[in-house]
Picture 1 (cartoon, one colour):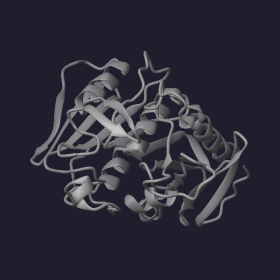
Picture 2 (cartoon, helix red, strand yellow):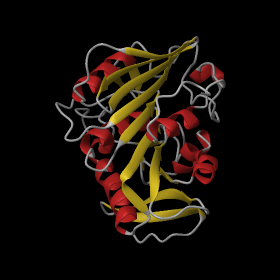
Picture 3 (spheres, helix red, strand yellow):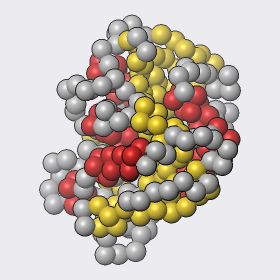
Length: 295
């Protein structure tokens, strides 16, 4: 990968594990290098472009002055055209571990993310201590996995609408996390349970189980702190020094990016929620705040 600074949005390619992987990157025009980096990971069937569009990340990148990159996952069948249902792009976020003959479980997406970060840092475009990852649904599980396995590179993560799908025993370095999850999510239920994916039954953790487990990995006190309580949004935090595990739970919201663009009908994903701008909330969290919606 050879990346140079060109203000605006461009599509980039990187050869990884014998295949060409694609990502979309935006550089703001009015900032001094090196810049913070936000990596956005799409949900099942999406793309780097849909991840950026869902959260309106390009607009936020230009306004706040950071680099944002939307990465493409791997097609379940690389020989067939992409399709959001029949042949979706997905991430190896850990959910397929142990599922026999699933090619996604062999894809090194962690290594891909590391290679992209390292290339941007080595080129002097991105500040090594200001790298952040967010993701939605399948991409949220990947954000968790990257937070564990790339803790030397990643400062904080923000998974939306999915939990921790691997079973880490420690974090090499503290990585703060902000989770956002709708309590009426029909795709990845807030209370956890068994979901059906492409003919397989997979167990999903409850939102609060993932939140508390991340707090344990950060060695946080088990005593939670209420940081926002204005229904339908309630947020609470587990803390250890500057390290935090936060959970923003939204009563009545489905499988959605709050305040963002939706790509699926409500009959499938449940109700949207627009009174919270998740992208703004996440960016302020990455910059060290523990904000409430709009404040």
